[in-house]
Image 1 (cartoon, rainbow, N blue to C red):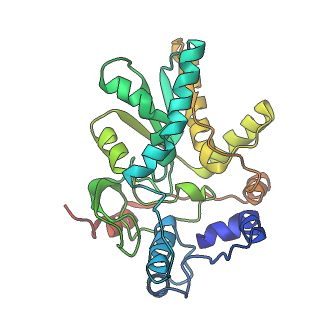
Image 2 (tube, one colour; image 1 turned 90 degrees about the vertical axis):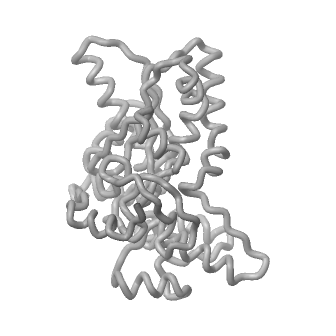
Length: 292
């Protein structure tokens, strides 16, 4: 488990341990890749890329163990496409025609799964839906990244993929939306973004949590920090419609609840939440390792 997530989301760790799991914060001293990452970045809170490197190494050295990468690789979007298929079926059943579809984006599996059947129709010229990927400002792979070949993990164990990335060695600041703290984006989504089928937006976490609290008070659902990026983008789109007088049907993915994220809400409610975004110089360090 990503170290900063084990600290920020302790009850997720507790839940796993209740089912007899052994949860090791990553990067750790238990693997060669973890020790190398710690040597280069002492005190780091880690990232999904770090945890993936350690998981791959552990699986390779453990009998009867298999690891299936759950971020970035295109097969993950295929599995997640059930989200979009069910959504499209519901829209067709009730005569709903979305003008805008929004999802949060880290590695891209949730967003890709949501938009897949709608995007297929757009490519065939059957709709003119606008697709929006909402990502954290602290890890802006689409909005500030580069389209290049890169690895899906910090230790460079995965195949090279052409994607939008801020560099596999980039470790983002400890944003509370742990599921979005990933350096790259799915090759499929990256290609769609590169060709202009998807628009990207990024948000600071204080703005995201302000939106999450408003949504909770209006809808009675406490959203996950990751999902709240999509809610923020949906509200921004609705406010734009009010300003322009143009009516739109906006569909967004509410991908998770935030009841394991109460520490994060406590940080926001007490005014202790901070915002961060990488400087151009920090991004250049990651870009320097990329292939053309």
